[in-house]
Length: 363
Image (cartoon, rainbow, N blue to C red; front, side):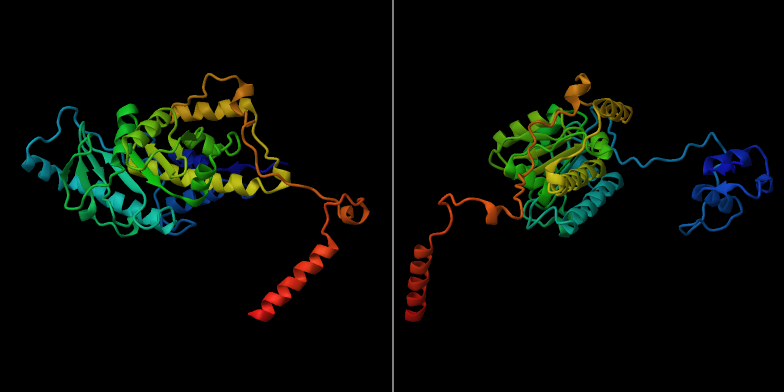
């Protein structure tokens, strides 16, 4: 006889209907979430510590964190006094604090070195918060953050803004959904950029959903209008871009979202790199049909995907990705193979040894 399995949702539904926990059969199987729901209903601690009340009111939706900043179009402050008041307002200081926290996370994960990396958050039609130049991301403070306009002119802040802000601004101008950008040099993502290798697709569902295809932008001098142009071009259709011989830049609806994508890129590139060294470099992919399902999920999350119109056979085409070559040499190859003249010359070896001994004796 099959035992009834109760989930957390089953328990909440039962309690909303006015039924008592005593009505649950003694031999029922309770999932961890079901046990938590019963503990919460009884006012006890949750399995992971703490306590929470069961949501018995179906009209109250559980909260999803959202850090996106919404401004009133046409409402940017104009005068110096208005700009300073805005720059020091509670809402903007909260964003600055989040930027400082993310800077520390970037530094702690070794995504940045020295004063490398930068963050921006758009907070108006013509207003953008950005990190300063020549300050380690691990030691930012709220007072470090600058305010610039969309042409990179500094409006507020005692530290000079980063010169690479123009690349972030170019992305924001080309892609209105980009309200925050994160630039860093994570080792594995940057390794792909230095090698000029575009990461393959269709390997890990989370990367497909939250990143989509990772773009590539050719090298141009950091902080120059030229690099801003090529990166912005790639970023229109890619939320993560490898900057050849430079690093990685990602964008999102808020600074947390942009930073998460940096973590996604680094984790994905690291996984692909490790997997490429296993099984002769033969990597498994999901099917084109399964990739379509993931692209559909991206759309429900408000993320467009340039691959939407591709045929299933095109979605997971990684023919341009060539992992490192692995040479399989039979164990007895050296003993049984006929001499081809490519081996070491014994007489030459003797001469090298003699000369080496004479040099060492002279020293």
